[in-house]
Amino acid sequence: MDVGVGISKLGYKRIAVFGGSGATGREVVRHALRAGLEVVSVDQTLPDEAARVEGVSYHKADVLKGGITQAMAGCDAVISALGVAFSPSNALSPPPLYIEGTGNILGGMERAGIKRIAVISAAFVIDQPNLPNWFKLTVVPALHNILEQMREMGTLLEGRLDLRWTIVRPAWLLHKPAADDLLVEEEFLPDRAFRCRIGDLAAFPVECVQHDRHVHAKPAVGAPEEEEFESPLALGDEFAGR
Image: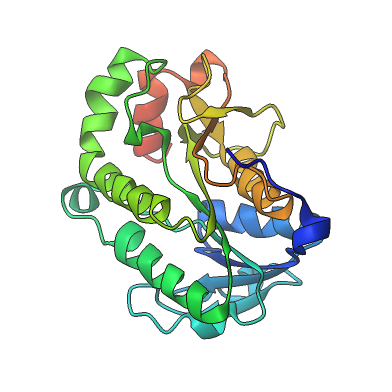
């Protein structure tokens, strides 16, 4: 695993964040700004003025239709926070964001001369021995088609040794601010790291890109949480929007 050489040598200063207006993407954008990076947020639909983050450049582009090279002009690196929301229809037939969308991003990067990318996947693309059995038997099968696309995205990136890629694999996402106690291991979640706060997840690819860490690696990230956030009841409440 290449742990990187640091921003001072590679000069990553301006990044394009795909999906920058989504729940995780907005946090990625904020963390990147706090880290002193220039940020371009790329989305199919631009957020309302009131929802935009000051200091961010917004660019409208559809990753499934291509034509995204212009959005990356002048950028040194890319973070993809593209995601497919869980719903019955998406579970059966998810849009090809992870495969075709990422493929189009890679094509745009090649035309723009960009070599650094970090993408957000999921820990559950492989069997995770530290997951509770109830989660393995219920949630993971329901996500099968989405996870399969994430696996293919990973295969696509792993075949590009000319790029400095990182595939971030978070645990079950928790919509909470960062706690700054993220545990990291290669591919497999650390013991009891069943959940991953969106705030912590968002900061991680920014750090990877800024300091060029976890290159050609698939870090699994998560942290222990209180029982109220780790139970089947918590999952039901979150799916119900409570």
